[in-house]
Image 1 (tube, rainbow, N blue to C red):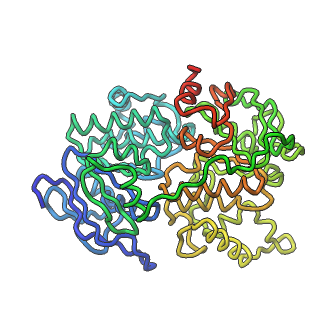
Image 2: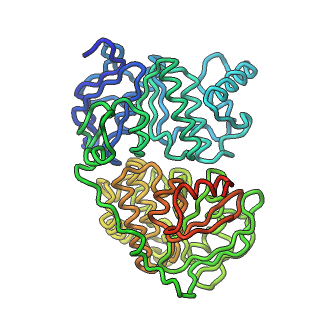
Image 3: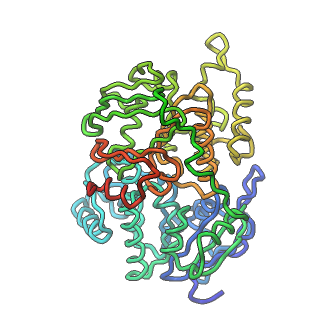
Length: 500
């Protein structure tokens, strides 16, 4: 072991009480003032390793060496005192506290008595990072991306020796991602901070990291410098094979001449969110909504689905008007996969089978009172097979699944023949390349069956790969429409920025 190594993991293994092996003899070193990438498929062990490094879990075998000495952190607080700050997936901010309070949560000195000092410190953080928000806003008023930025500021405020970022950019806009990258590089170059950077975006791993460790099934399959690596080589290390991409858009069953409409949206309006939006979705069609964070794209989906009670205008499915409620939307054949899967889409403590059957639980009722859990389990087992969901059983709580497999459970909720239109909000955010391919193929299966999809995706190249038409959303309005085959990511970026 070299003396300059900040963190060194030797033979780290973790076996959970239920017998599941999460890590198998992991070796990894992080040097001072370097960005070390950590990648792998969902369920490969990345988040487990991050929790070990940050003190949230203890390995069953192996050792952690910090600044050349063996350590046994018994809690995240032990790791924080040593100089480790971590931004976990779904960082637990306090919704009823303000941005200011959350950024300095856990700081010393009884912060309520030092509000002026903390405001000054936050202003300096804003200036250093190049991102700013009202410090008095409550966290429950923020978007998913804004909450992620607050979590990152919280970690930055501790000026750590080692900053651990677990999927930090999954919910961020392109501009916010650029801000994050610049801030990470500044900390590395000016403060000598070391960074472990976990991401499914292979382009950012190749551009921001100095070295990379790849995990597959809990084992290291690659560990070395980033220089000379390609996305293809990384993909093979992650999956153990080359990635088979779905076929192109020409396989969608979009009949240009058909007058049939699955989803008709007319004059949809929500105060300060959506402004007189009208469009149709036809059978076998994927319609993309392109817009920057805060443009109103997600708000359109929630207004259609009935989860925005203040929305006005009309929504019809197969020519039948839909009342303004989520229950009516589901009965009409609408399904929603929200961006915030943990907060809005899944119940972490519930089993896989119970989450999958949740929208249609009434069909399993007996005399309106009792429920047939066996029928629900059988249905869930079928969807687990069809969507290749990696879980020990359908009785596993969803909170124990990896991000990509939890996302597939969200899809399985709506894998039902009665669904006519699926509303997808960032469906591949935070999932690996393999799970992303599975989700794209799942969308293909839906439209091949004659259903419709309304898709929000911040990655414009990915959006164009999947969509037939793209509606550009700016300040709550649809300001342009393009056929996917007749535009490109550069044009969409200009349009969503108001430059088109």
